[in-house]
Image (cartoon, rainbow, N blue to C red; front, side, top):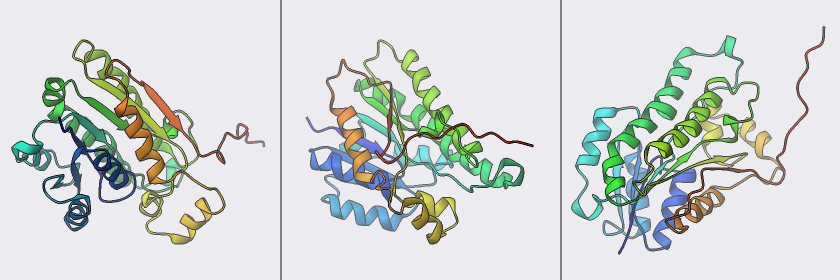
Amino acid sequence: MTKNALITGATSGFGAAMARRFVAEGWNVIITGRRADRLAGLVDELGGASRAHALAFDISDKDAMAAAIDSLPAHFAEIDLLVNNAGLALGTKPAQECDLTDWTTMINTNITGLVTMTRLLLDRLIARKGMIVNLSSIAANWPYPGGNVYAASKAFVQQFSLGIRCDLQGTGVRVTSIGPGLSESEFTLVRTGGNKDAYDKLYGGADPLQPEDIAETVYWVASLPGHVNINTLEVMPVSQSWSPFAIHRQ
């Protein structure tokens, strides 16, 4: 029996790599994102309409999301895996200098969009004894200057994952939160407003995680036997670890 995975934020980075990984293993995928042209190109790459189906919407638009899910053709209507990958960070300034609009956008995307998608698909996932994988971040546990709302939103994702796992006990639905560390993708270009110098400085010489590394991790978690649940998982490149506490001195 072919399984269906719905992957949000699949126009680039982690999401696109996940779609490729799951299709390579015989799954069908529903890929979502705002950029319809990129989704269409990925559908073609993955084998066309028999293997992949694109849903174009903004993850912060509840009505558009619900309408898109309701429009799924019968071939894709049953969902075995939801990967809540869509998310973003905006800005690196300290809280007192941040743009409130950026904070609201992160909350609407990383929190509200994720919980909305989860709730819209829960009945389908329960019917299939499926699985939810939520993309959090090491920022959920390890704060850093400029992380403020982004880090808080990822802490929510991690705790939400544990909370719904409690609620879904007895349904057969598995829930996992995965927290990547330093990972090379468009994420940093979005965060810095397209600053390529900042991108190069962050990743240069660091041998960071690649989207394929996270796709492999998600696939591994999803391919475990049905009685095995990975609750939370942090993934860092070997080059990344922890620093001493910052101390301000007079």
